[in-house]
Image (tube, rainbow, N blue to C red; front, side, top):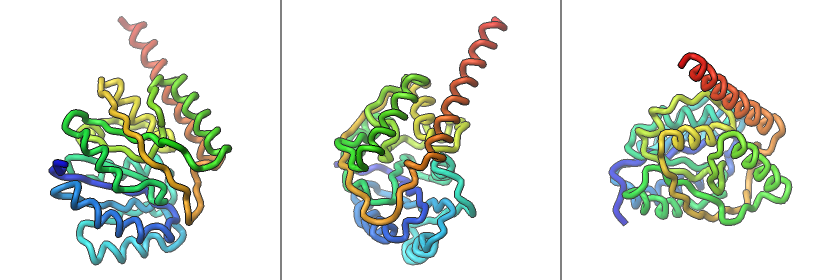
Length: 241
C-alpha cells in the first residue's frame, strides 16, 4: 500500500483515562506504516479525570503527539472543529478514543485515497445495544429527511478527508450534528463519498455520553436550525431575483 504524504489523526477525548494510553500506543505503532509524515492530536474536551495528564505525559516522550485542551466540556462538534483547525497535514482522519474501532482498519480507507477525497467508514454491525441502535437509526432518518445526505452510517467516527476540503467549510454547529453537517456541506460542493465497512467493538472501559438526552436534543435542534436557515436563505434569494 502506498503511504500518504502526510496525515493528521485526531482523537476526541472526554474522560477516557482507561483507554487513552492503549489508544496512543496503538496509534504510534500503526501510523508510521500509513504515512510518511504524521501527527497525533489529542483534543481533550474538558475531561474531569486524568485523561489530560496521561496525554501530556505521552506527548513529552513522543513529539508526534500534540495535546489541545478545552478548559470546559464544549461538545463533540466543537472538538471536531478544533481538530480540523489544528491539523497541519494533507489528510485528516479522526476516530473516537473509546477503542471501539481498530485503527489498523484505517489502511482500508487509505487504499481509496488515490481515487477519492472523502472516505468514510460505516459499522458493519453496531454493538451498543438495542436502545442506542434505535436512537441512531432515528437520528439518521431525521437528518436524511432534512438534508438527504443518504450515507449508510452518518455518525460513524471513522472518517478520512483531504484537509483542504474540511478547512474551507464554514461550520455553524457545535454538537453531535457537526459530523453530519460536514457531510452535507461537502455533498453540496459535489464531493462523492467512498463508504468502507469497519468493525465495531464493545466499549470495555469508561462511560459513553453520545446517548445522553441533552446531547441528542442539542444535535436535533442544531440540525433543524441549520435547515431553517438554509430554507430562509433560499427564499430570500428567490424573492430578490
